[in-house]
Image (cartoon, rainbow, N blue to C red):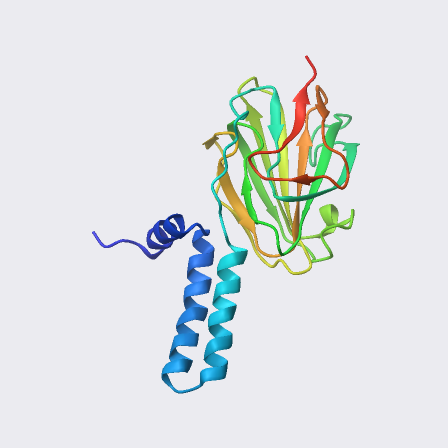
Length: 228
């Protein structure tokens, strides 16, 4: 049976350390550069090849070692970047009165943009909401920007949520999850292209262990810890 294009891209991406979506985009730009060189257009060809390398660098997908991910007491960051806000608020579309810790992580275009599961458990729902593309570090981006809300239940039945938010440059959110999927803590679950943000909604029986301005890494940095 012939290998599908998506399977091929995932296999190549895994071998060279970039996300499958990056394989497709970088290959197209690289092919355009090679064609330009073949036609004798040296300048445009070299520029296109450099752009292909930049695209590949953006979609880099390094291996991570969540040494503490086996602990049910911890919540790991789902994104690389800088903690831009820590607040308390209801879970989006959740029951009135329920308060969660919201930890926002802003990803600049230079960060790794592959997202990972903050906890292990079962995916309860995945809901995409179209919207605007304001700067992702703005607080109102979580209400007005294009976004994808993932609600999950950990092994003890506690409800967590993670929101992927597209930013000013981001025009596409990739989520590889579906309701009733089972994920491991630190597992790759998708990505957001270019500058963007991830909001983590952590149950109230956890304490937040990061501060605004702190750098975090997806699948490795601890952002929440169970109180008891």
